[in-house]
Length: 183
Length: 141
Image (cartoon, rainbow over all chains, first blue to last red; front, side, top):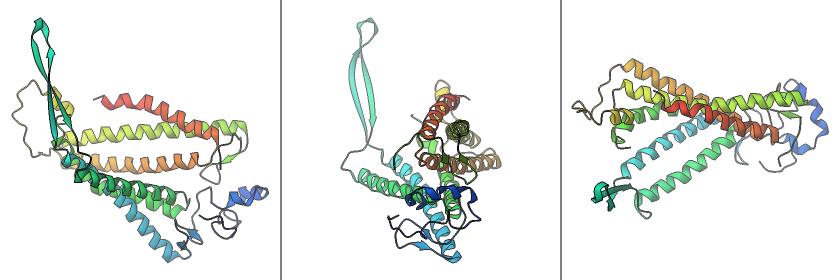
């Protein structure tokens, strides 16, 4: 969202009088406050989406953006579940440390500590890091999309998250506790 | 953009415009309850997951700890589903809770984005109170 002084960009919140009669008192504020809508609205004209070249002007483009955002939210949920699964599968390096500790009656007992972890330079950890970066970027994109305050796009985010959770957590609910019986 | 102390804010929807201290106090209370709801939803999802796994008769870690003394000869690797319908309902309930969690979470983010300090305090306090009230319910069976 650049600081362009083009009042038509993203100004759906104040220009159409039938939308926001209550914000008519805001004309005395500086123009910077009206760049981004601060309340929810339904519309598909002049909707800037994340990047400067990506502007939605027609209903068809809004439908395409709806589908794209829906799939992005679904992909985000799937990525979260996939990362959990990969983490569990890669935690096979178990180190046992035994140390003698004094027990009752002066006997010596061997206490065994188990540590589960990954090496820093191993491939699973590098893969997890790359997936983590992708996950962070997508989560911020979804936040920014929700921040456009456009009703259609917000519904797409919520519906995509729900569908993604439904489809991918299904697998998680079946698999999760079979392997994690030691914790 | 910076945090300001102000009695005027427009939150989330057009009709939610606040002009007075009483309106602001009421709005902070509503946001606080919203944050409490968010924490409760998280706990609710975890409990539904626990119930779904019990319906699938996969031993959860709590049950295995209880069974540690007994001789459990029925521990297979394959889950025997007692009631697919109940499991499906649990999973569907979890999905609905997940959608509610996503929406409430984003609403709280947008409320903080109003850059009103009172609202921000409401979110933070509500998260604390919600965590305090809801998380003990997580280990209840």
